[in-house]
Amino acid sequence: MFKRPLKTWSTPVTGEQSRLIPCILCGGARLRPSLACEGFTYVRCADCGLVQMNPQPLASEVARRYQEGHGADYLAYELANEKAFLQLQELALQDAGFTALENDLFAQGHRAILDVGCATGALLEILKDRGWEATGVEICTSAQAYARAVRNLDVRSLPLRENHFPCHTFDVVLASHLIEHLNDPRAFIREVHRILFPGGYFLLTTPNIGGFQARLFKNRWRSAIFDHLFLFSIKTLSRLLRDCGFDVVRVCTWGGLAAGIAPQWLKQLCDRGAKHFGFGDVMVIKGRRR
Image (tube, rainbow, N blue to C red; front, side, top):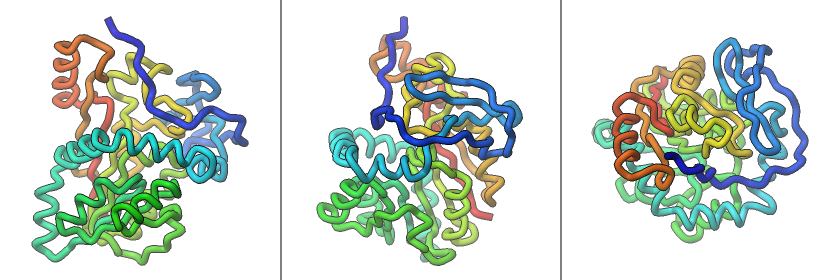
């Protein structure tokens, strides 16, 4: 009944330098095989359940993917899918209760927002037009240059920590489909915590390995790709956020089945069930800084 799913675009698998790492969530070393993909593998921590690529490419190798060679390919992919991606981002913000949050913060005079991994700046431009003091971070230099030149946005090309934003700079930080690409998600979340005002919000969107599609398709799951170093579940990502000083205040998932892999009536049924019962393919978690 189900057709083979198409995987998300990724840089090609290459012979990059890599190393074995312990679990980044609990530090455990009891790692069990999880997904065997073409040219790379994922393991699952026997202690906390986190799924991560292991061996893992070095951080310098990962950064090079977005700055050399494939940067133009990534920009072309983002531009070709910009409208669809923007719609999904807006729906994720809606699920996270963003409008009510926006109204509340604006009433208090809080308007500083940061979008990390903002790509071509499509969402950032909308936020700026809505009255936010909008800043972006995008390490793909071609996408960052596009956001600055075409949309006249304040988008930085350095990784988040290297921008050295002062403490308590932002009221809201967004990161959509970013954290799964990072070598050190814990350090990233700690930096977000540092630059947020106390009581500020972090909205994080990422694939959900605890979802129906991930369980059904396993190593053929569309998010099991070379560029995704970590595959989080609601449980593992919520734990990481709490460890780094956030209270998890809202969790939503969506996407029961991808378009084209099943009859439309079945997709609609699965999509409704995924949103209602929390087994969707993608999740958004809203954390509040303690």
